Amino acid sequence: MENARQSRSLLLIAMAGFPIVEPGTDLGHIICGLARTNGPEFVDQDIVVVAQKVVSKAEGRYVDLANVRPGSDALALAEKVQKDPRLVEVILAESRRVIRHRPGVLIVEHRLGFVTANAGVDQSNVDPTKGAEPVLLLPSDPDASAQRLHEQLRREFGKAIGVVISDSFGRAWRIGTVGVALGAAGVPSVRNLRGRPDIHGRRLRVSETGFADEIAAAASLLMGQADEATPVVILRGLAWSEPSLPAAALMRRPQEDLFR
Amino acid sequence: MENARQSRSLLLIAMAGFPIVEPGTDLGHIICGLARTNGPEFVDQDIVVVAQKVVSKAEGRYVDLANVRPGSDALALAEKVQKDPRLVEVILAESRRVIRHRPGVLIVEHRLGFVTANAGVDQSNVDPTKGAEPVLLLPSDPDASAQRLHEQLRREFGKAIGVVISDSFGRAWRIGTVGVALGAAGVPSVRNLRGRPDIHGRRLRVSETGFADEIAAAASLLMGQADEATPVVILRGLAWSEPSLPAAALMRRPQEDLFR
Image 1 (cartoon, one colour):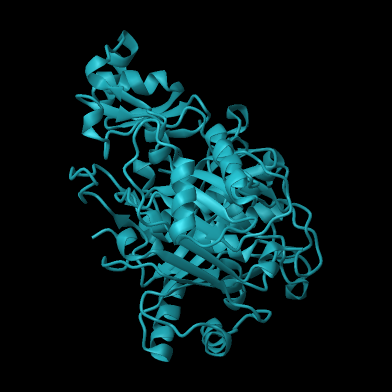
Image 2 (cartoon, one colour):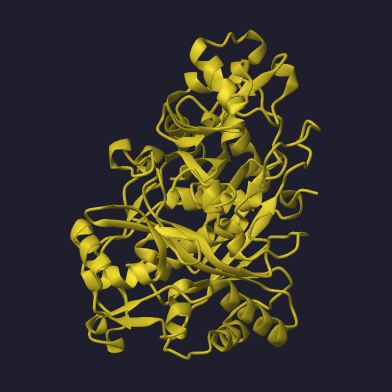
């Protein structure tokens, strides 16, 4: 049965009162505490969306550019893209390969498979106490981080609560960033609607949806991008019967991709 | 002030009871009627998301493949992509150019600028009373359709209600379709967060978000893809101060795009 027939509404709540996150901060502990004090009581198939930035901060994924010595590849590429060679060194270290570049733009395949600008390395909105020139990398293994949080929420609340770790990525062809899932646990990141009958009783041909990406995009509407005060959003009202699939399932294999 | 600080929750409601849509159906009339009988009372900055398929159907955007005679370009390309040459003829007529193709895959730049598979021409879920082998094209001018609906809602309810016409598109690099905006009125389809201070008081560098695309993705979670019974979703809880921008603003210009 089609999910939309079961779920007539969807509620997203941005959890207020999130503290500044330091390396080692137990995000699950904070989320559980906020949920207990000012959130709704969790039910199965609630989903908690957590902004990548606080996960990276909790994992201490800082690099201080002041300590980076760029290699020859980074120096050559930095000249082409007109970026700080030390930043380019950090980006290359996080990447499998460069996909496209031009002055001001460096799009790579991140070591985890994401195609994104600057390997997600973030120079904005980074705590200046973390080094002379700190930048923040993506979480080391966002699916694993999501899984740990999923298990922590289950222990705390006894419910199967989905977890999505989100970021905002630019796209090919279209202007503007949208929320995407970097990591997920307890949700089917890709849902395969193939073969479900349409309303005329015929078979759908292909209908694979990027479920966790749509969840991240929805949460992004509430998070805003400049406002770290609401890095956690709870979604309620979705339902699914498929097994969980990590966000790695959203990565198109390079050999099956026409655009890299 | 950051939107996320104002809006702590976001509610999406799928409007039940949507009838089968025929060419000439007044969608605005149906939406107004459903909203009056079982929707919430509209307030300014509510957003109505309408699935492309019902807009196309109301506009009678059917083509009967039985009446299509493929030209030589379509015949040659059809062999390469292993598709019906008549369908390829229809796709090419809707397109500016072919972006990528391989057996089973035909990605084009639609005449309106969208890069998408098969120019959005849909063979699934199409009313078989509309021809021997009917297919359904995208709306002829989705921004104009959204604008008309926006004005109709304003006349009916006296509120400034945003309208987004949504579809589900595949992406480069990532598996699965996600909701995107084909047309929009009364909302800023792209929001420019450039220059807003981050929580450390520094300036953000670049932060253009695909606001209407995120709205479409959120609505897609409730619409489902096989279920035409809920082609309209109301979003409540977003706020913005920017002027409206049509969905055309989401189109990256080909000469500024590294992936076509």
